[in-house]
Image (tube, rainbow, N blue to C red; front, side, top):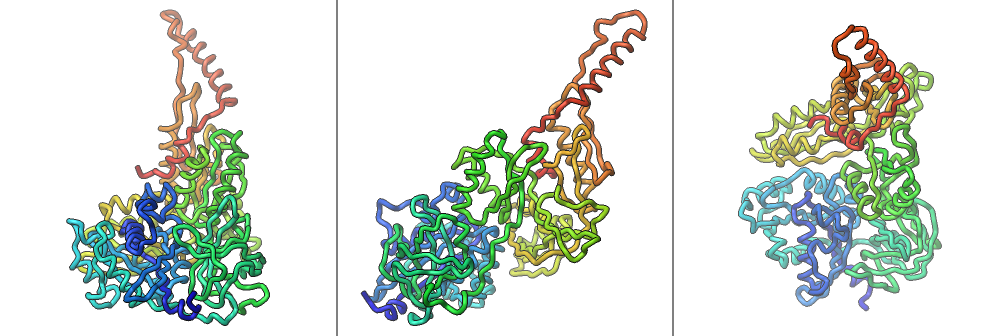
Length: 605
């Protein structure tokens, strides 16, 4: 075994950053093939994406890490690839993966050019002083435009055109050049093997037999099997039952040194005890400081998840707990609704995260669930105590308007890159969503980057779909939170047959309240089946009704058997029917179909 210092000189830690669908997972597959890290039998497309959902949607949801050995000019090198998710919802995971590396492959699709996500992840990498290796992927496509896209990359990075590596992950073109660039241009890890242990946790996965497996990168010191270790953010101590490196299968080792990437098994059974971004150190020889950049992952979007059949409540709880073991960023707490019974109020990182959780519940646990209108977390302030905020995750938690001082909502900085032909449409959409334009930069004569400050609540519903529609699929979108701002928000309640339906309440801006109330009433009128009695659907702010629709009763013609004779006979029968309908309306129960809850999200369709 070579000495730790010599080994450090030949280690290269790098990640791959790219926009969704620019060929990141395919390129990782080719690197594994070329370095002989996988056998013919183990080969499959998107090898590092181990969820069916990731393969089907063509996205990476979890970070993955794998070690490759490569001999270059007679020397043996260890290459640690830390794959990152590409979607904006998982940007914190991306930031931790980047912090564990010294270099990054920046992949740009030769047909689609630079997208918003590419730029945001690139800035993250530059903040961490990573060596950037630009790769122009998919050059074999008929629609590829390599010269123009190379110019875009040169303008963005300020590098030399010769540094951009043309490649095709599909055919394997340029893979050898990429590996050569990683060895020549990515610096070896810095750090001292003699200092106390400092290891950065960049991911964790739950193994039902062995508990939580923690993935980490050692910045200083070393760790041996059986060492007593401490997680600095939680302050908890454990024994290192097994340590090792991450090849396609885990390889147990006796000791892991500075600069290495590895895994750690300590028998932890609760995934919440291992936090991404935490620092691992030795209990008896502690590091004086934790690695910077750790923060608790905060949910951005909240929604209620209810079982379709109330008897499945306990089963749903068990399913959610199992899911949480694999995805510690999912937060949930029990809640009940008059319309839907018992369920959970869940916190998600964003809309994609919410969709994935819902789909995983259905696939992995056979749970059919109803999801209520998603909303964000607001801060409400009472007149009595204007300095103390009340966190409102559910519209029904909003205090009484008469005692309310103000409400603050989360704002984001949105960055949109689009073709210059669609600038007008994109601006109109953002202004409609209460956005303020802060910057407009022409990256090239054809491509524009627009920056907006806008409320997070406005992008929760249908913003992304509409952005893709108006830009014919060309616009790309990225956002980062910028804090809370005061807004004039009101709660719009929906009343069915004079009974409020709490699951359909929504917190909206005062200026949009009337329009949204009217649209919700019209939508519900289409979806709720007719009954034997009239059903009034009303939208209200407090005690004030702002919109109303009526679902007419199915009526039986009770006067059919009256022909001829006095009109009073007909009137008598109609009056009798009217009394019956009135009594029925008092005790009648209106069933709300599941589509009604989802329809609120698609008010613009």
